[in-house]
Length: 285
Image 1 (cartoon, helix red, strand yellow):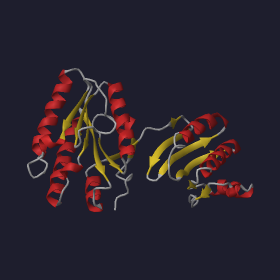
Image 2 (cartoon, helix red, strand yellow):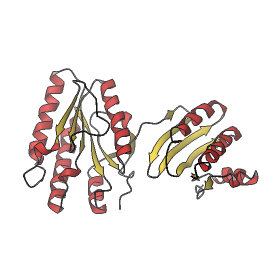
Image 3 (cartoon, one colour):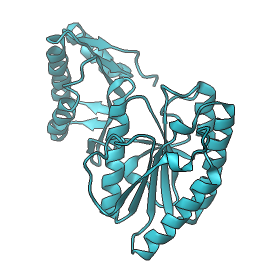
Image 4 (tube, one colour):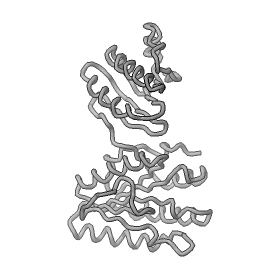
């Protein structure tokens, strides 16, 4: 099975460039809406034309958006009466849209689509893969970029593996924090944060703000610490305070992938007994 984040190379959605053909394998409407908002915001900032292929009348993340730079096209326009995708018809539509966007002065065409409505059986899978192959070839010119969305709750593992094979990259949300020393990214499966880099006194406010972004999560929170190079005592205190706050709501905070020396410090000072805190497996050094 393909892990939802593991296509070929992970990229923040805001770092996508014309010519990219990426995949979003999402597990919740919240995850999809968050990344789609970043996708649209980045497109508007870059002066791209945005075309969204939607299987629903009100795509999450686009509701209420009114701008001439965003066009929502029902995927149903390219489905047969049996609900099967017509790859050639859809590619003609995208070529026309790309040419029109250039004529209108946009930098590039930015395409996103919820394609699960076309996935019913083995025949539907083959048609979708045909479309994805055509799309990859079309976008090599660098005049457009695409994020193809698939709901992992509705796709079989074999289908996910097939989709992964025709995309060069997978997308994730833009970082909540990105400095020269620290990157913090919102994670959704499981809910939490991925923290990379160094946390010193200059980063305490940034870490505190990032923790606040997941304070409202109803379930347990997982903090992936495997990419942390340095964490001072002030940063550790922030994590312990966050765990105690979660404990008050009968929830836990898992520190996953802790470097062994940090796990030893937490245990040495007795913080491993902090209410609401759970130490996950240590990161292999």
